[in-house]
View 1 (cartoon, rainbow, N blue to C red):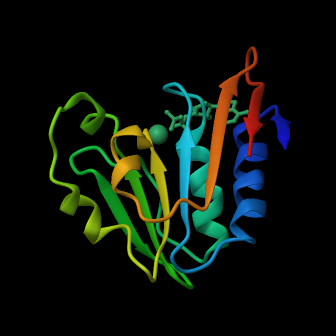
View 2: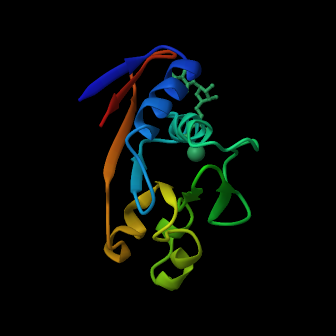
Length: 134
Ligand code: ADP
Ligand code: MG
């Protein structure tokens, strides 16, 4: 399915809809260029999963974990993607059987993931328009 949004708020709302289909152990890969709206979509999804804290881009760490109605993990592997060899155990703190996990720039992690529930791709479509493929 492909959706179009015209604002960050609309992309957050799509994230909320996506969250309704997610539960413990689910792993959602979110791809797209810098500024596409990956974090924005994940913010909406995390809120819908009961996360009350601000959902921001992980910067000094590969991820954040939040307590919602279920644990919610948010990873950004942008820098990891540039490294040749990484310890896949890095993922273990985040991608658990209990958590709903969202992974931005997931390429480096893909070979290590036991389970991939959904793939979302976000593309710029001019101005504030985005094309979001589920
Ligand atoms: P990414 O995580 O993909 O790098 P972010 O979600 O951090 O991207 O940032 C997306 C930026 O684009 C935000 O500043 C947001 O306000 C803006 N934006 C404008 N239009 C949209 C849209 N339709 N969907 C998502 N973000 C949008
Ligand atoms: Mg981001």
